[in-house]
Length: 478
Ligand SMILES: [Fe+2]
Image (cartoon, rainbow, N blue to C red; front, side, top):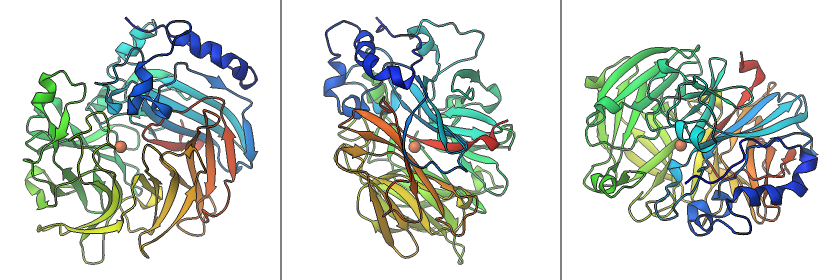
């Protein structure tokens, strides 16, 4: 039986604080009790715990000064399971998607909204009507602006779901087909390149697609890939796409025991990296072996002056071996540099930074190109205490620490309009404050992480730990 949930709570900031306990109590399902399912599981407790209401908040408290040139929405997607969730079997990657958005307007914080991405099950749980919309799974992993529209996307091969400017679900775009959470934008053309599962051929194929600037599919290439590996991300360079065929694969044993998330560590599956010319086919892929590992996210990739492909990437020693509920229980990721000869041979692996770190980003205009700076979230023991700014040319780094009991999320870099250097811009991320039991959006000066935050936009609600998002300026919205 689904938990009772309020369909929509429209809340002004001033009214939120006294109302919050009553609202949350009502939404826990039975008065006077807590939901035990959220108390025990690592990926359901603390700030992993989902929120129970959708809010629209205005009149937000701001400390500092919001740069006037930032007019648009900071959007972030993540899992927020709706209804009763079993601690033992819940996997962090499977929760219903919820998009959080904070709109800035000419130096002001305009609004904060959070909305479940409507799927068939979310619609049912909220007792809403489909209203003619074409809905499937609710993408929970990333939210992007593309073609003047807003899209929630996920790795699972599900179709993207279009959201309105105010984050309500519009519906699926059938033209995209099954997609991924991590398309790579070509900064010169604006096209999106992606590696996606192709469920009809997934036993031994995936697909490479290109989406034009108007969000139309313009290219599909079938790629032979046996073994059903988990492909979370890809890399793009000037002339190549790169596939990561790593030893986390579909486990029929897990499927047979009813696991909601079927991927497990598989030492029998040899790790390799595939390089395909952008205009090539599956036959043109050159595979290179690499040590057994798993990696979700490259910081960036490019071709160096010798034609070698350089990829900076967060690498785990093992994944989903002992911890089958989320990514952090087997090992924590370090930052590596992989150098690949596109003609083949073993991948050269170097450690850039042994400290644990995830969710790397770089300057958006330098995706697929040589670069100097990356920004990445430090990962501790169930904590996300800092942003590291990595200078991958010099091998040095600086750090912004969020403070005691405060935890960040993926850092997004937004270049200044008048930028004089690669790192002349802003970093934005949501920060959770344990003491307030609430979150805020912080804006940092990426040039100098020793400076205090330029602005903190305080919310009276939590933004649970999640995955990925983007700054979508209003100029990119049609
Ligand atoms: Fe990801």
